[in-house]
View 1 (cartoon, rainbow, N blue to C red):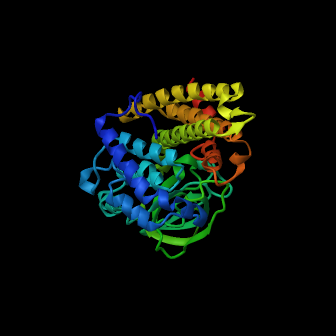
View 2 (view 1 turned 60 degrees about the vertical axis):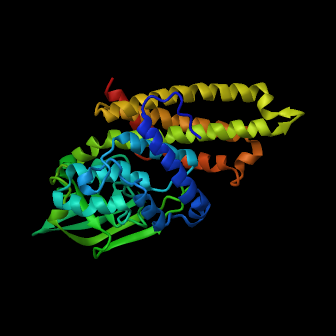
View 3 (view 1 turned 30 degrees about the vertical axis):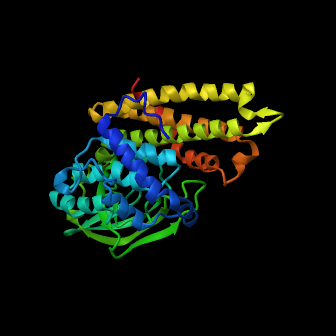
Length: 380
């Protein structure tokens, strides 16, 4: 269980909410997690249960059916999911997609989609990455050609979280292929549209419960009213939402790192070798002491970043630095914690194996660690 004694980003209301979240996950998620990992997808029943419990998009305003809470409530959910060793896709909906529609959507779009996202009736995804384009979003090849009062979308996307379940996809596409970044737009595509096709549920190293898909668009026609915000402003919108997206990843990374550390402490204190516990060896204690110090600094930094974001002050460079620091820390902790498990750490029956696998992609999606360094360097 995460220790809240020294935390500064949360108040008593957040703590009460956290208690509800923990009880909900213990009841509705943990008994099914191993099955979801094997099946490669989370049941829709879980999404609906999350909606009923108020765990989807809690920051959305009450006029759309939300709770109107601050981002700290999202952070609570992110931390508890990560500490539980769960990758179930709901954070993408709450931390990322919801804000795109809230900030840039028309009132018609907001009133139609946001209540369904809050209830879990609608599952959403955002389609950025393409087979030949990762972090360089200006180079996307997917096009949305205007014909009368419709856009005709052609292209393909890959590595799309929630792709198998998604009822609505925000598609990053070129509405003007000659205009570079200024030709990028965000377009809402319903999964029921003719020409939209889901590819396979991709076989990943880790985060197996989170379905991740290829998506294909072949002459998919949507009304021009499906544009999110203004045509040609998509790249600006994407850049504007980066701080929250990257902070969310940092939060999950810190939570996962703490769980890996706690697993290592528990294992080494229990396992005997050469007449003493593994914990009693100086190498073990020094390794854990070093990791404990880094985690202590990590939690203090994370609280600082969460507080700044709630106040609307967290910059893109600061959020990028947070993602860089916490995801790199997560993998360091997971790797050393697995090493302290010895051969047991390589066995899937131990949670540390899942934590180690799931941590690897954190340094890649949302912008690689190398891209984070570039962003931070430009601010210096």
